[in-house]
Image 1 (tube, helix red, strand yellow):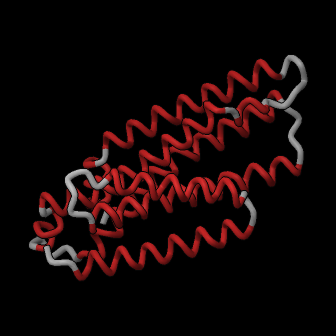
Image 2: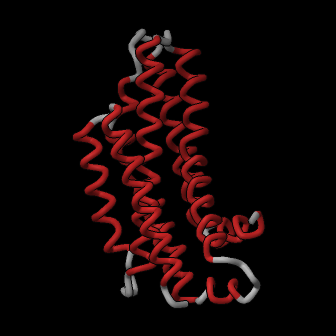
Length: 212
């Protein structure tokens, strides 16, 4: 299993590098704004500005594209067909692929959580309410990213187009818009978990039953 996960990461290295760049850029801006806003005693509200929205949206499109690329490359290059000759089950291939996607999502969010926690403890007086909101926002954001990744996996496998990403991006954009309207409450959390579970079941069914 470790070998399969390593292979998935290597095949998606370009996406992992893009995610690292986005993460470092996001952290740099967070630290910069928090440091300069601390002079006036104001909370760094500018962290939630258009730049933040742009970076997070870009990441969601990147993670969607990663899912599309993994499945589309598999189908076009007959990767699963080759691995099946090595006595590797399709379930293991799919699990390794999903784990690689989860690692990419964690690679984007975990460094941010650590950096922002340190920044707010150094420059801004933390509050219990802010801590709860902070956790909720990142949990929902991670689930939205996982949902976008699942959309990419599904369309990358089922689409016969040369550029299936064009079909995936509008779906991801609609999901992002719905979550912005719905907010970051327990209802959004419940809906996202159901969406991810249903999509993973559907992806597995398509992946297992499709001819290689």
